[in-house]
Image (cartoon, rainbow, N blue to C red; front, side):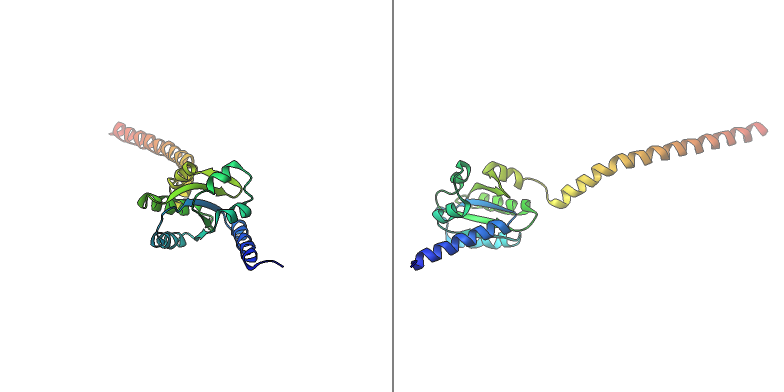
Amino acid sequence: MKHIGTIVREKVVDEIKENVQQSEGCFFVNLNKVKALSISQLRNNLRTTNSKVYVAKNSLFSKAFDVNKDSMANFISGETAAVFVYDKDIVRAAKVLVDFAKENEIIQVKGGLLKDKAVSAQDLISLAKLPPKEVLLGMAVSGLASPITGFVSTLNQVILKFVWVVEEIKKNKETNKK
């Protein structure tokens, strides 16, 4: 017969595993000496990016993430919280998290997982510096449209030059008749 504590721990591990499967990414933050108000603010800020903060014991995170890899062991040490990102736009969540960590120096970003790939804290900071998705799409469209625009402009110049030449010939004929 299992103890209630064992059943609860198994349920928490299953919940963490389910969050990992449903999320697009997971970031780890150090919450050592962080007040509850700051954690609530972080939760509220991340809610706008379809993300949630999950706090559990490191042993439960280790079981859920099957921590055998050195990279994961670095993330799950000290007082740890996991931020599960459910939105495809992971950059927004990374930006909110990194900005919040800058404002509240007690909170430290440790790293994370993007699907099955471990990323360092520096990678997350670099990810947070990327422009928003809409800007990146605009830059891509601009890059694709630029050669076409240049081609159309060149064709337009050829036509204009032809018209100018015809106009000049017409003017020369008129002046020669006089």
